[in-house]
Picture: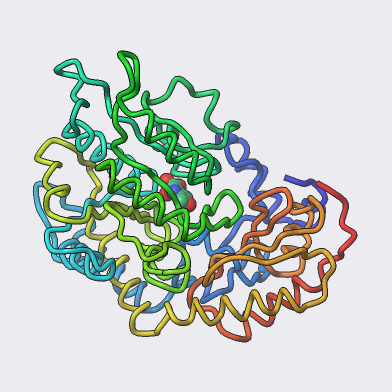
Length: 431
Ligand SMILES: *Cc1c(COP(=O)(O)O)cnc(C)c1O
């Protein structure tokens, strides 16, 4: 983290940040501020400074902070039963699974598995893909076949647990932990020929590779800087998966739950070309701030591959998380927040494109998952300047700021964000 912003930190912030570093492993760097409480799209730090939050806990706080219906649902459930284990079930968990399948438009026989995070949703999907891979011709290692492969994209991000990390591209966060899970490989994101070539290696020669069990991708690569893969590419990937009996796993951890202006990004023709996935994973926004995630497998046949003992987690489908998620989905529906994400996103991108700040080279994204491309690599300086002026944004890449406002943002919130962004000095030094 840059040090210049530390000089303007309040005394309470500084005191707590000093203690933070004494008791936490240093995996996140020094936090920017110590936060106290929020309301709607605004949050206050321990010194009482107010911020308009256009990061929303990294695309998590769909309803902003302390939405009364969310608070009521979580409080009521906490007073009833916070946890029961998977020897038992609860009403909120059952209702939530049914609702997610419906919102995804998944066919009869589709099933949900709950975890507690995006990485866990992807771990579940990758394990299901491994079981599926064993059903492919020539792939069963037990009878001398070659283990099926899983293909992921350069610049993709799927989480930091060992399986999810095996599909995560960024060398700086992956390579020091290798060797990871075998039979994972990367193809150049957006290059149809490269994907074609990767599939074509199937079963060649004695030492050839096994068939492809699954391709995993984000339709907008969020951590890479909000980069859409392109509908033509996704369509081509679907076709190759169909021809080779491979699964298409779409990681909707960041793009899902209304964020891109549709319930899931794959439902946007301009992102997916209209394809139907075999598995989607979700997390971030679903719990409205409560840790919650999971996957939906499409169709009965695939869903039946997980049987008792195949997978699980103590907290999976926890009633407190399920209540938080149900309340989040209900409020998104009642308040028309999917449409709001689309409209406010358009307002935001238009506002940035026409604000006249020469620092901004371009703006991209869908709904409220957006990024501003900067004319030179000063994203940390720009983020800190915005923070000092009351706006939270994220330096997602050296020359890009990510904007992921809560879905409840108003027209005025967006105007205010644009006016702060417009006044970021264009001559900030490179980071
Ligand atoms: C954030 C993210 C993950 C990981 O989620 P965690 O909850 O941090 O484990 C996985 N995939 C995508 C696309 C993400 O944006």
